[in-house]
Image (cartoon, rainbow, N blue to C red; front, side, top):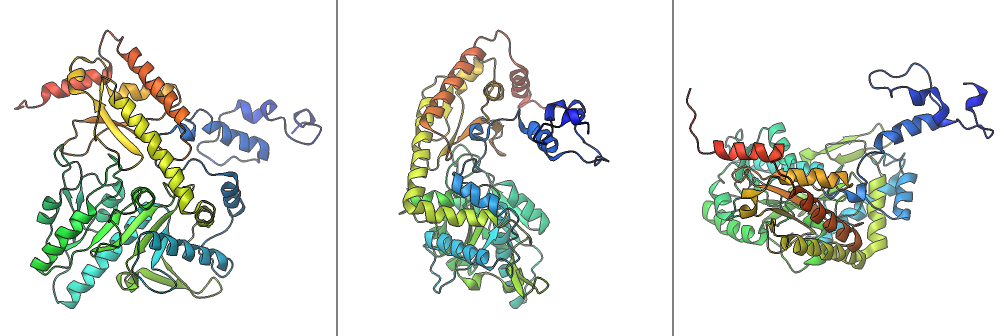
Length: 470
């Protein structure tokens, strides 16, 4: 590199370099080295035009941590959690987090250490809970001399995609109960109708991704008590509490949804959602050690000692575990309650304001979590030249990511929008968003002709009910 491309302090003149006038590498590793400052800038510039994380109201994932939490994670970026011989205190902190989460969910398990596992997000935590239920069912069937080749799992159609992956990977039949306008959460009667001797578990959801609502887990537990007593089956509950697991204990601690219920044998959650940690972190807790099959524990001795681990992944970052432990110490129950209460207050403010706009209708009357969905008012929609997909595009032009999407099977004709309020969303930001929504709607209402998405919707409406023959 010529001297004229080097500053007096030895640093590279980044935007005077040849790399800045060439396309970024996309197919092959470059033959020659690139100065660190320039390589950094190339990667940084790729992210520049994206939505700012705190304006992304589509994601549940934490986009803000304080300076000390961020510093801890940066300092631990090179620590591999699984290497317990080199980093034994990380394993201790992980165990403490498991204890705290288990006790937050009212575990009945005695002893110093509770039974749980860390995962890379709630997806891995769900997988582990599902695998444990499958293995327990399989072992019972084997012991009884019965076939064990046709396991099934029951949950609503508002499932998160990890459950579809789980059922495909482990060859488990997925039986889904439709959510409908009449039953916007898990229909307990229909769920039990789908159960049989091959059902490994029922999976209710605390904090449904699609709607923000909670399944009636206590009602399911009560119905399952009668069902299991009558049939002689032993069907348990795994609660997918990816969002609600860190909301219910703070905002609705009296509500019974956790290990206070007899048939809840495992619960999974996401530490990187309302656990307030940067991604990726998940937790799964079992009622006690007897519900974690021994087949799920694997040991190695090539890291300096015998290490036993429960998880689909082996190596994983320790940084998120340290950050979770830091949050527990720093925030305490009061801090989490204050943050989530603020998020809920702001969500309710947005929910009320959007519900008052003539073109919209909220999906639910009340909020159970700091998120909600809405759709176009049916009467308004009949004459509208736009759809919620157009509103999403308008808001994106102003930096907001507010997703529009179709609902699950059986009500897939409904298009909705969703706002997820997390730490980092202030009342002032919420008012700016509401103002931008109102302004965008005003612009869309000036359209003289239908947008492409509206034309497509109109064609779909005309085709509905028609019979096509060859």
